[in-house]
Length: 354
Ligand code: PLP
Ligand code: COI
Image 1 (spheres, rainbow, N blue to C red):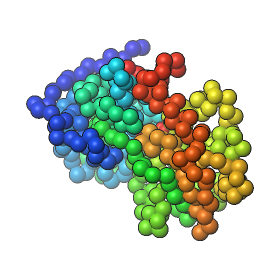
Image 2 (image 1 turned 90 degrees about the vertical axis):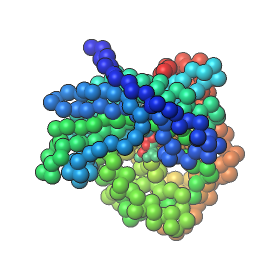
Image 3 (image 1 turned 60 degrees about the horizontal axis):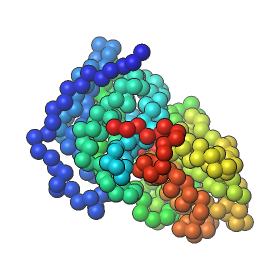
Image 4 (image 1 turned 30 degrees about the horizontal axis):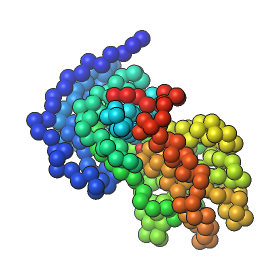
């Protein structure tokens, strides 16, 4: 069945675009002129609307605020040299969106509708998509529970929204990261694989402590013994060891990243061997120490390819080869960017043209 979007559009009377300094765009602080809003009630999605970006009135009793029935997605739209605008693999995010919804006992949104909503929102703010290498329009779809009810039960009403903002690189330097051996991000049977708001709330104290200790990011390890590597901050983690791309296999504690999946596919195309399996902290540290690990990087929409310069485990430092000289990261970054910015033919159909 083809879902068609019945959308009402109310345009902003004036644009804030002229006042934006595109040279200074810290992640997540600048929002475009419009946003998309939809309501779920009586068992269906309705009232799809694009309105000027702004505050929304809500009851202080909504269950999203109290019990965390809330999750989000993150994607980016890119401007090509010929002026076309594309969103990178929104179909993948649509699938993950509904996985998160299911785990949090929230309603799903048909994948086609999700993609159409994103396209309509980006279309309303086309002029906000930066025309600059490494820059894009970050798209933040999210859903949250709106029943004004303090009973611990799934809400019967929800809001789906899409907000957007132009952004540059999330990290401006190569990273010094700490292997976290006290706190955990996710445990088996939990909801680490969902993009649940609560996963990020719980990560803030460990991340803040690590930053106070001089680190840029954390490497999350398994909840049982802190023996296996899972993710890095809000990104997946990948290594190149003995020329092979090695990354933790996805499981219920790991977010199944679109960037991760894309890099794996490109690596396969390049004839690079890929191993997806449990990755122990010890094997990675040994490989760094003996020089066989040439690359470590985070992979994510916001993070892009965020290279690691140093990993510290229980106070002991392991230095990676100079990340600026990494051929692998440079090759992957170029391959991804060439597709995203429309510089090569999109043979994989990864670009959704708006
Ligand atoms: N892992 C976590 C916890 C994240 O928040 C993200 C960011 O979205 C990722 C991994 C990377 O996923 P993606 O490449 O789909 O952005
Ligand atoms: C993204 O890469 O889209 C993310 O969700 C990371 C974000 C939490 C900063």
